[in-house]
Image (cartoon, rainbow, N blue to C red; front, side, top):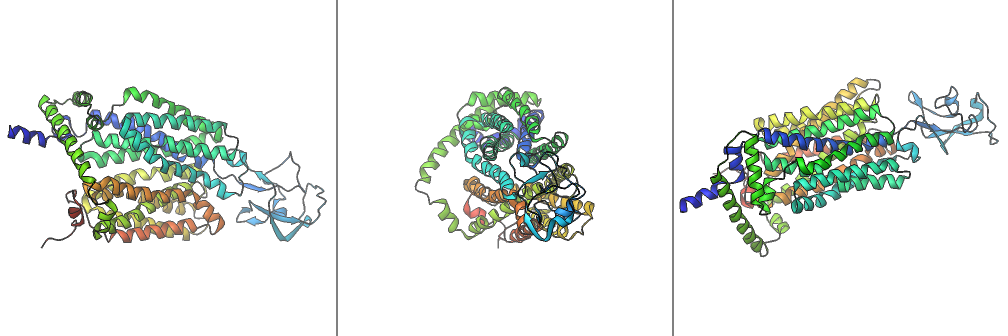
Length: 545
């Protein structure tokens, strides 16, 4: 009897995945592919505003020289009326007219203007009407234009607790389908937006109620994959996200009109409805809700697809283990009522306190630089679509380089090297001489590759620094604070326009350099056991005498 009890205690889902079903097989690969489609759709939604609300070249309307109906964007006389700017002309200012009678002349000589006095435009001429900038008269209003991106990232921040509640209460599958359906219809109604406020509200609402599919898919994959392949599975999902961004760039290139692009991106997302029948629920979620029959049937299906044999003995032991853990959890919840408050535990442990101070800085840097480089790529010299596609594509080797290096040289060398290489790329980009477009793009792409290395590495490293009992909450704290970076990143083009064109890249370099230094003060976790208690966590890296 005692022997049977001990055997039951040893059996958990990870044991079954490792020894009977297979840590990764056709069942898990099929699940990853289904989740990958969801992540591609999320990649579309995350990056669409970079094109639907992209800058349009503009100039001042010159009533002294052109009529309301016949406007040529770059007429021969333009530099008589508008100051030069680099190899082109100013987008937002003009020379003050001398003759207030506004008598129109076709040649528009410079004698009609006071070239010593420059004023802001009163009305604009747009090179094209492809984006919402034209519809909502956002020319030279960079703050209102970039606020669209910040509204979207604020919605993503607000979605985290909503998605967490839905996923834990109703299941991972339901959360994926609900988020996907919300993204589809809330994104689609933007096609009928005819006001700036309505456009911004639809971006926020879509993100708030429709961006939770990534986290739900990620959790589902992690819960159904063996421990050995979880980092790899996470890298696969990140790869699908990069593919989503790349295909957004391709679609925007093919369909430049923002309303038609909106249709192309969101109508296909209604396919997510069929997932209610084709994607399985998480075994772990079924067990946590006492749905043992559903969990057992799913495990049998996984074993069948993977061509493995699952014993009834293991299923019985798993159910027994789940019952024991449920009772243990109830006991722990009672104990937690008299346990010290988590912030007090953190403040009383200097090592853990230090980590909770520095890890949010790593996450702020990650989101700020990652999204900032994606956003600013469409404003670089050259083809905005091709630039964005290249900057998105280079994320893929970044993810997989991290997977390879993390187990070879350790977590800290990878993070320090990636942060600092990214910082050096930002500094080099600032000093690239004008006209060296390909050199600038190459440096920019290497910078994005570097910050992509950080993404995979930081997820693994942050989780390994905290004890099991508090890991989720402390990890979530760092991640939530890190969202500050993603909210500020869309505003960086406006910072550059208002202060200095290279200010965003100076900020990226500063944050990346600082974060690299901060990694030095935390311990290496490669080869260490995941800590279960505060004491074990604080002793990581401490040499035993």
